[in-house]
Length: 283
Ligand code: PAF
View 1 (cartoon, protein in one colour):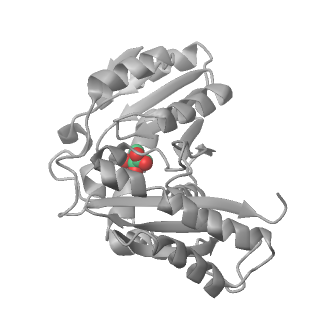
View 2 (cartoon, protein in one colour; view 1 turned 90 degrees about the vertical axis):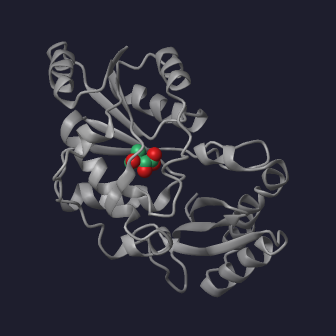
């Protein structure tokens, strides 16, 4: 496994892989790797003969009052983990090489980038898409894999790839969950014991929505009411949203579509949690 920090060293390393007729899969991460990331690496491995993983805590996707400085960083454990998974290249650039002084041009995530997560975290998706296109340009992968847990991010990356004709196939990895349903996330380490016990409420709210969907209910208001009612059992949780969006547009429709994403997010004490279920009537 090669660990590369300098973007200019990536090109010859990738050229070498291509010379050996390898197809390249890419898993962008912010480190603090857990089983969710592992599943992304495995999706990539199934599709391609070489895997590149990036570890970069991207400052432009954090708001001024967010957790950029304290975001968990565990580089040694991450490298061990990736070595065990047989990853070919780990790209870990320092901030100043990704955003040299004077860089100004960014990607605008469009209207969907200003809803839900983007409404709570203004500019977040512009930052995500800007770093993702930069990483795509450096790695030029055949396939890139992102987690379903960040459903709006995944939607917008697909949108960008289509709208800007980016020559990469975007694939998704399933959300990996703890035994009580809590979605694995690098930020779960922020949860105190009492908060951790309550954090599965997001999963319960989504399961409530799924029951409605499976019973044939397509009323947007019913989904919102039922999911919020479930969330209200944990008064320490302050919801930002709990609703259903169409898979095709990431927008709310009433009646809800047959291919839908139930999405939920909010704060448990100081910790922000998000989760979603994808539901399809043809399952
Ligand atoms: O999902 C993440 O970890 C990040 O948003 C990503 C895609 C690596 C961009 O920084």
